[in-house]
Figure 1: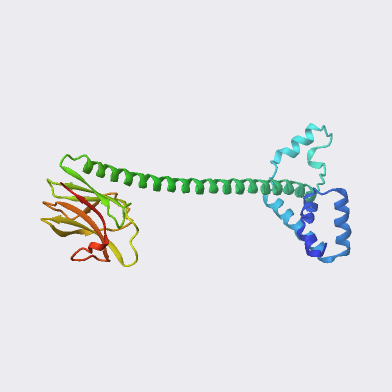
Figure 2 (figure 1 turned 90 degrees about the horizontal axis):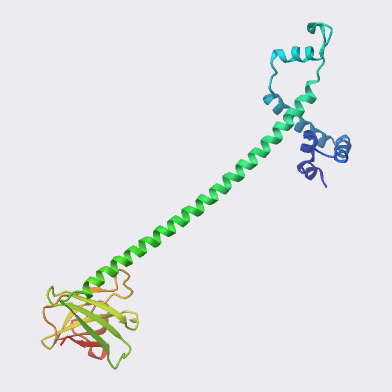
Length: 261
């Protein structure tokens, strides 16, 4: 072990605190005698511990000394007895205890602080997730309620647009309110439009196709989409047109068709 590793191993602190074994104590004293840098480091550690003890030591009350000597039944007057004390060893012992307790207390406080922070972070993440899920569910519920109002209205006619030969699997529902003239559409199954293309709804009025609106795919706001309103219509159909729509339907690109009669 090199000099720096030895200094950073913590054994000098243990020596200064008086908590190392006899073998470790002998080793420290031997190495300090051989290495001036390590000896200087040990002196610095001892000085720091001593300073800490001096800063935090408690002064005994003035009458403690007299009471103690009286209890020991000394015959001489208390004032004439010379009391010799070695302040350094006592101070070091007290400071070592305080220093050790301080380290332990700081470690426990820091650990609890870290655990509390982690719990708060986890709770905040869970709270955010629950709030987001609640908002999504609330929006979905409102959507279902709006859809139910449409389908349960006795003035609304349900028109089934079935797939034609070009796309027999396609299926679209049109809900036409004959009182308010509103038209709502629900896509059940339509192939994904190719790039640059867009589906367009048509109302057949007096035998002529009339634009009923463009269909926006992947509409997440509602399962029912409001289209153009019509007073009369004999049928509805959907064609695939260039993006943005067309004035007239491309009949070879018709996907679904359904009569209102």
